[in-house]
Image (cartoon, rainbow, N blue to C red; front, side, top):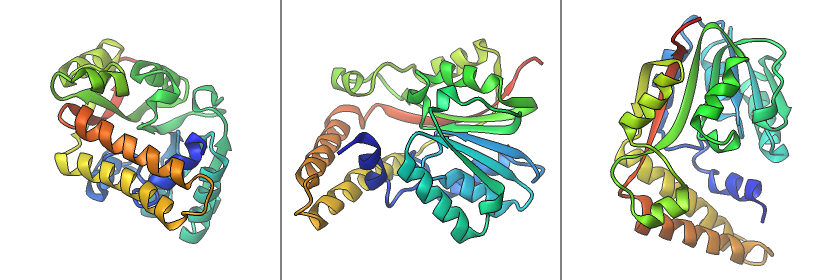
Length: 245
């Protein structure tokens, strides 16, 4: 089973592919989209959950999404048609880091997709040429709430603590204007949904050639979470504006 298919199955019951509940998503979008006629870009949009949400809330918003998964974009198109917002949504199948924006956007989103760029600062670098003057970036990434176990670093890689993350961002020329720290409930709910949705699919499709592999992947992920990073992993969504210019 390829990574993109596994991700779609794992997020079947949690279409926001990050540890955020509906109220947190809506609060962040209300801070990012204030006029109601903004142009919004999502780099690594997946099934378009963020974009469908903002298009449904603001009839004057136009949006574009970028992702490498053909199946995810297909589902995004289907969701847009069902929601009656398809005429205001443009989707591109390409690498998010290589997306050649033809115009500037008032709001650029990249939540839980910084791996596609090579990290948080690289993600912010990619938004500079896509962001309109005075625009806002909404970026979501991991940080360490406390010193992680070796297994956590081995599984997830290197991150800063919260203060170090914010310091790194501000040193790069960005000013936080709002932020959300995922709660323990949001973090746990996301992981139970990820592992549970993938496990349920495997158990419901026992004759599928990928069933056993999916069940093993879910069990491995669950073990890495519970024994490795659950007690140290944090997730922050930052609303950022350029400090100068």
